Image 1: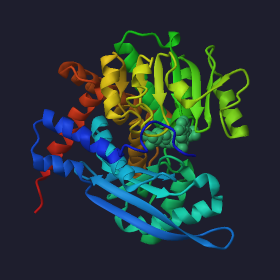
Image 2: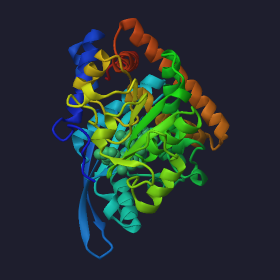
Image 3: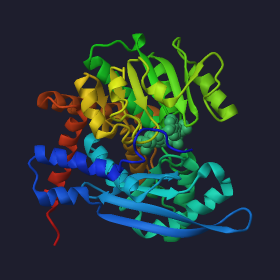
Length: 423
Ligand code: NAD
């Protein structure tokens, strides 16, 4: 499950996140003090803990929970299980959550968590014990009004159910609002599972409207066929009528210029463990996939997929960042000069945290909405956010990432200034 996406093994994601804020801080004429405030996480917890393995031995694991900001509300962010998790990666991801929540205007700050592990090599029982012990270790700093975890890479609704159950035992109350992305019978929200991809699809729809392009005459290429990439492939096909010509996962990609049948690709991945070898399609590498001629490219795997080495060879008209941080700063400039519209992660994949916000609101009220209500509210929030960011970028003649940061950082700074520096 090693990383092959871009330069991220050599480039530190936290440094990327800090450089993005510094660039915008200068444009907003923020003081050195406030830039330092914005670039340092509020709280960081590292935990080392034992887990009993199936063979009777125990192994030590390291996990992190980082809370970047609670200026605009409780901290919010996913938990990642991956061998390459590091404190700097979690710091960067927590900071991106702060800007994401501000971009779409939901009342949360940013957090993120991670455990260094390889879930593909662990049994369900080992994963449950790892999750419950990690939840116990971070319990003192999480909670429905403090910090609310959610799924991220290689964690899912089952992992969230274990965290919710563990937290509820600790505090002696059933607390569904302590975690989002739960199974629906435990207080999960209708529509949450596909909300990140649905939000991305609404952004692509708006981007095509802005560029006067017709989705039914367009093609999409998707890197990463997990929660975000798999659902994005299906929704771009089913709801916008786009032709999905290539998808990939960590083992490689498949290409069919006539368009892939996404449900059959899903079934093939379920049966064989990978999209590779899909009948009728050509196997390609992840590098080749990124450089295909297409209308919309969706990087939906890990950080650093588009860097200075391949940015010049990207042939998409629109890049919609399903993953967090898939494009490195030096690549942003190259894509902008080529006239490619890049819909940044803090906007393009914000549908997930928006639906998490809906789940949290429903859990606090113990009153649940229909999938139609969820999708309509999501559409309203994502469409408005896309158009705010698009207008600000056009007005300032900057790329959409800079436009989104100008709006988001200003929102967070306003909240900090209104609350004042304590004491
Ligand atoms: P996931 O674990 O469901 O899927 C990840 C997919 O990426 C898998 O198909 C995996 O095989 C593939 N992959 C891994 N390494 C790859 C590589 N080098 N090249 C190509 N494919 C590779 O994870 P997910 O939840 O879909 O998350 C994907 C990205 O989206 C992450 O950056 C995550 O932070 C971001 N994100 C997720 C959500 C969400 O709601 N799940 C919300 C916002 C952002």
